[in-house]
Image (tube, rainbow over all chains, first blue to last red; front, side, top):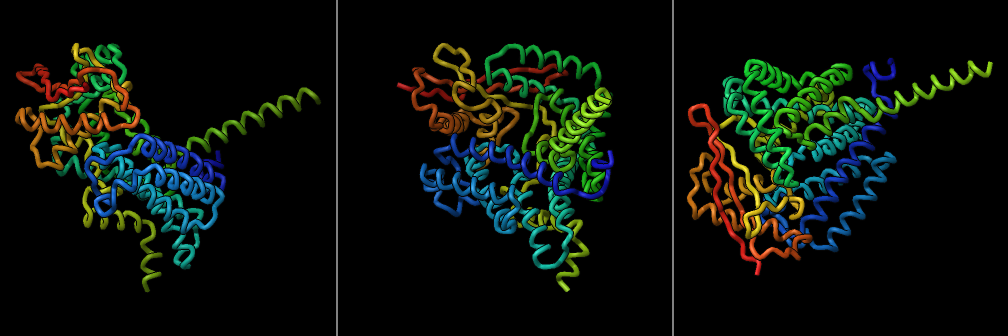
Length: 292
Length: 146
């Protein structure tokens, strides 16, 4: 338990974070590069570049090769200032290709986490703060935390506190979400599930208000998760519960938000590894006891 | 001096940079206010594609997802300064946006060999009237593939 419940980040924890983060990031990047050979509405970084040369097959190949090299450097902890800066820039470029085709998957955290890690290595190199073990993770948590807090501020800015009570109109979003799930495969099950969910929703309106209020508070105060690792872990679990609730009601799961949050605040791959180690040790003890 | 300030503010330095970036660049990747579901308006839209017999073509067959059709609708409307929501778009505007939405789908490399003669893009419009959900469907664009 002490391995998990402490306020220091070990190198092995960092390695598990890096590996899981880069797997999800690479999957998103490869999908975008393979599925986009056209740019409908250049925005952001692409409005300054020649969009057509960006999606050229030779550019894509060159991009993938350099990304693989950068990932090797990233995992092996080599030239981290240049590696994280490169991964940040390529991440911004590739996600902008997708957004320039009108698809917004909210991958901002994925990109900016590389920038925050770049900053932590600059802090070390320039002797501003040499505690790289902590900073490279805590800086990443800062990006995630501000993402959630900004989301809450956006809700309060647009709808005010009425956002909670406007939730009674959520069945319109539920209809839309489940209809989209139906449209993906043509499976009627999702239409039925959506109708059932609306009935459950309408029968539990006060519970819905409570949960929306709780989610808004949780998002608003997400910045406190930057204080230390223990708070970050607890907060990560609470945010996970919120995401499960959103998925259950709306059939919506925004990977670009919950995956970075899970990796840097809860670190499930590390937890899984600890559990496996514990099982292995217990088995060894049982076998040893029997041999004696 | 600068080093000391950075050391003392390291707990929030990334937050600070992100907020400055958001103020300067606005909603441009990697900066965002994360405005998802920041209001529950009295309307929602869902888009889908059918063949010439009005049978649904599952989005997976067109190498897209339903939600991507919605995203592209809002992005095109924003780019062209077309006001959207609550069913207020004109038929003409919807037709133009529908053409662009279909162009994005059909330009995917895997969709070059689609065999359908026609593809129809529909919009479902849901809204509340006297506590009941009203559902209106509208054909917004028809693409001739021959």
